[in-house]
Figure 1 (cartoon, one colour):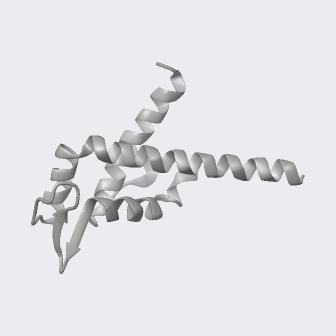
Figure 2 (tube, rainbow, N blue to C red):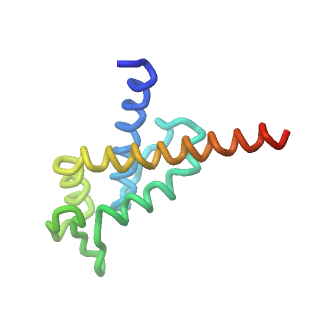
Length: 113
């Protein structure tokens, strides 16, 4: 396995934890993440949360499998235990989008400059 993919997998593991906690409104520690990602975390959480949970009058249900109702902690544990691979894939797709966006931005700056 390449060194870069090991680092990417470690980053994704950290992001999954942050995203799951943020998706249900629990406190999360973004200091474990690279500084460049911290400003994007709220948007990332919001986009992924809409794919994971339904919130109807404070009652949480899982959009992936339909289970519920859950408390915040119950949904967090359910998503982490049952859907962690799915959440990892969502996070990976989001990170790839962020990387491509950054790459396109730097290519444009180089072309203009």
